[in-house]
Length: 452
Image (cartoon, rainbow, N blue to C red; front, side, top):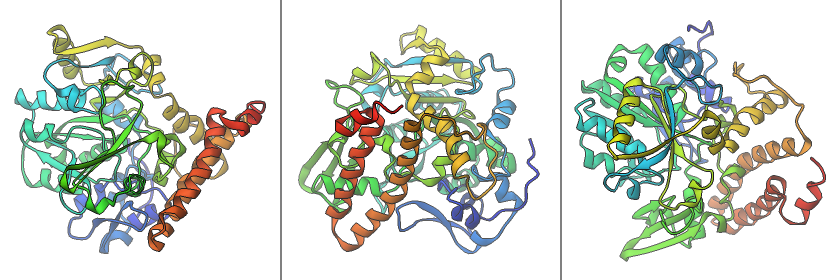
């Protein structure tokens, strides 16, 4: 569906707080744009073309008012989908389960379905390579790579809550013919489809997309903050794991781990971090305030964590999966029948329940933000602005925005002054207020429980 909007520049999107740092724009403009970390540890486009407005950019940026939305993309990609749900999008089947064969599950953050699917497509000769996130021995902790064999692909398994971007793999796909799968968060997969619509080479070569359920994007400073709180320096890290898998404890008890020289590994539960509550919004990218796609609605397959009981209590990990491509549906059913996958069909309501907090933030919370502080660019979202929410919900959404914005600035200051305690003291205090608001804990929480 064509969007009759005007030309737009990358700088305009950045200034509006709508750049998620996906790198799609830099992928097509390698000579004039590159992605760089800004002062807050977020990737932004830089270069001669950043100030140049164009219709091509307006049509390919996932947060541009001129880009096709998720409904339009999914309708074109999955016109015959048997399932329709306003939260999950079009789909053929939904499951909860895990990979039963090999050690895919043990090596994954959750049930291993994303890596298994990509590896199986490669083993069957349906794709030649996979673009995915893997540890980066260079300047950044993690980055996108193109893997052309299963071993390299599997080395990149696990969740990475760190800014990455697609420009390098877009250029690699343009440079080398073949069939590619791309794994990414929903807005990145949307960016891929917008790029495919503009460049026939990408449309031909990117044959499969796998999305990961997403709450929001974090800046690079979250890893640095976690390192501070483990009495380590991130620049000394030889490895960093945001979700160390510990099978004998619940899957939702996240443990971060940093590997240091000499074989020293330090671990700490997220719950013991000053800023370890994901939902509070520490280091959130501002563009995520304006996203309404939790479930990767444009992808052939979406995979996430099954955050409901009894699955979240199992430290070995369970995935929730939304299958949209009919051929992948057949693949999943055959693998389940053969015992390679352990899958249980799930209703759309059950799948949505596993990501309930994200859906509240991206639907109800988005509606409130649109009414109270709309973005600088005129976005057409799939929810209508509203303010008729309980006072406590309004406070929660406002608190998250405050924490997201202030955490970037306070961490920048603490980093510049080399005083981690400055940021940490603020984070502890603001988190205690957020916990009282969101969960009703402490004396303040008991008072707020009377005010719904």
